[in-house]
Amino acid sequence: MQLGLPEKLQLDANNLSGQMPNELFALSQLTTITMDGNKNINGSVPTLVGHLKHLKYLDLDDNALNGTLPRELFTSTSLMVLDLDSNKLQGSIPSEINFAKNLTFIQLYGNELTGAIPDLSSLKGLSEY
Image (tube, rainbow, N blue to C red; front, side):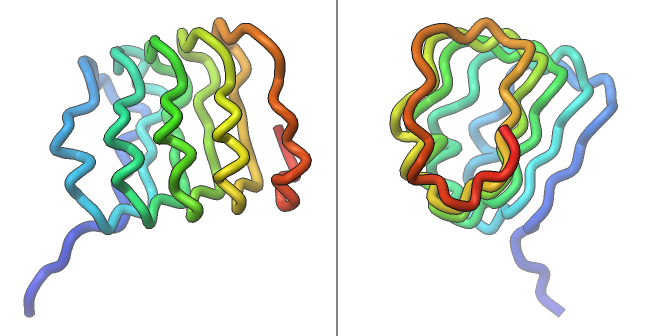
């Protein structure tokens, strides 16, 4: 039996700290990444997240992520759930959010985001934000 690449990475509610390693984004078959509730995962959301074309569920809430929301985050048309609340993210929500046509759920509260909210009318499946 040959093992393939993992599809899910679930590391929530631990004591993990530091930045998300770039090697994580070489796991091209990932559909789910959950690292919520670690409190000390810091740094920015890596732009390499755009390489995960199968990513459906990204939950990094309740950490210490900072910087801006990378435009590359929204290049995956597979992304359905984005939960980045309770971090230290700054800047505006990029208009590229509209490229993530399958988004059904977005949580960004508890950050330091500024600026206008982009028009989200093209996200027809969005039910909670």
